[in-house]
Image (cartoon, rainbow, N blue to C red; front, side, top):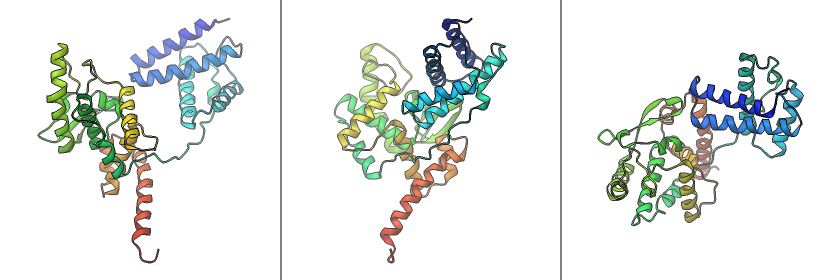
Length: 302
């Protein structure tokens, strides 16, 4: 009979394999760990001492997740995590019976992403007090996100050497360690240079530190995802924006505004770093809504 500590050890072995052999990112490993330890907690509460071999037990666990009001996307990820883990257990000859073969993923919710209007973006960008050090940094940060549509993970890992000011391009390291060059406008570049000259470089000199990252906290260290999230929430509140805005909202907004103003879908796909154009096509739903609004306002028969 196995102990719970044995099951924990198997989870950690699997996570090490996923990180070293499969080269998965730290964020993905963190998500896997959270999912698998939630599953292990369920096993403990049910008095089990080994990984379940019956689909009915997996269904009970997933039902518990739904009872906790977990989003469909979270449950889908949970199923994916368990499916990969059970495949690994079989390959390691730890457990041959795989109940995940009988589990279907839930139907996807087709919810449109939240996007800000151009007026809301303008108001948001004006909120930081650029006469203050952190305000100047935050203005440069927000301008960069709206100018490029980069993910928050890409933003916090952005380095000075990644900026090609003469070409108005920025090199981004995206998902799967794939590099891409994307445009950045003159406005965002000017705010970055102003922040670099007046805040970033003096801060590093004062702290006797060096850093290759562009956006730093007041200790001269790279910003975290949580810090960027808090920055955006704070300025949205100041701007009176009541939408649920996250760092990803600015990415959605960037894509939506490009398409509304006539950008080609394939171009937007390349800029965002989507491997599948169907991921980008969700934004066409937003622009179609915009088209209908314009039509209703401008057509004499509506």
